[in-house]
Image 1: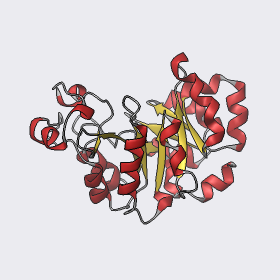
Image 2: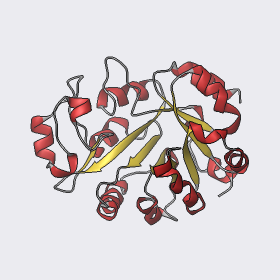
Image 3: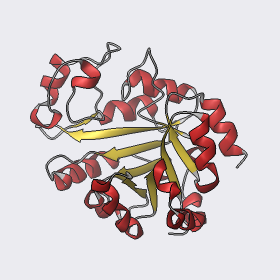
Length: 245
């Protein structure tokens, strides 16, 4: 899909920067409700990751293992929602949120980027549960769907959502870029923009760069992207530079 058509289908706030795993900081743990509320309070689009629990519920966390954000070992897909809620807390004291809790706190006030985290080829079950949950979304322009696994995005073709394929520049994931024509946009590791072919592609297609952490990185990729996913940066600097593109 051409760049202009994608942009026409998206809430314009996507073009002002996307807070990676919520607007997290030393006080608010990533992918927690406090980080998401911080993004909402700042009228900022935010990104988060969904996993499928053992009992077929969707919870929000980047890693499959809860240890980094809770200090306690545990694979999400091996645990029930009750086990997670009863036995784990984020480092800021908050609970591991469910997708429903994120929907409830946001109420479509700001745009969301939802990343599908496939575990041991569970893409079909993950997608089916997401479809069930997404029936409550009223404004599809406020939601983008992303994943490293194109199989989790393909079922949403003609759904009205903009789908974006993630690809790192590491060799094990470079092959994913080959599937870019099967979705509406791409989310690329900023190292991809050293490639002339990627810069050419970006002229006519909607492209996001991640994860930007300082002004030097932002300035380097700014000429080639439509928006960025960022963390550890002043949100106003990101907004200002994207608005002046």
